[in-house]
Image 1 (cartoon, rainbow, N blue to C red):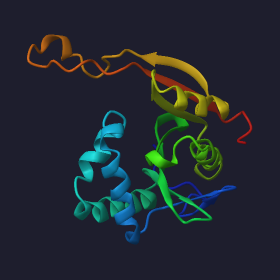
Image 2: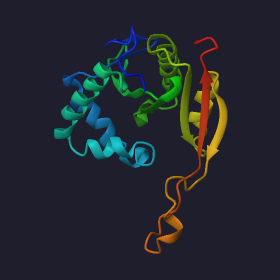
Image 3: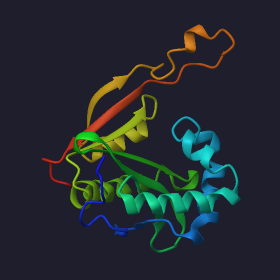
Length: 200
């Protein structure tokens, strides 16, 4: 993890052809919560911590304040995604610095925003931010093996498949708990991109 925010990684906004990515503000609490709340079933496996942190609208301002603190310390860079023309809130994309110069990217979109190229557009901006302002040397995206759309988005930006986590990774107790009848999680694929490639 980077101990302090790298130069140039202060609170900023990133503009693309159609999108504006910016840190959340207190006034964003309602739309931030709405997309999470409407997407709980879709996001349960990929963003369980986020969903647990924001169970109600009343909890949303606290979470947004935590994001602001993470920006100040360089622990975590979370952007909301807005459509520049309509001002509609579309989703969330984040970058988490890790050890050895690596940073992990995660994102989600509102259901109505999927399939329009927004994820690909937002990811391009975050790749530039990660290699540029943050100074990461390698970027990581993890996605479930059955999430073909996310894999295509990663590959479109030059990420390569590094490997696969076993389906029950992190749940070694699963096969020994006779009371748990839930199926194992799908395998998780790791896609990486090194800074030596141009951040386009």
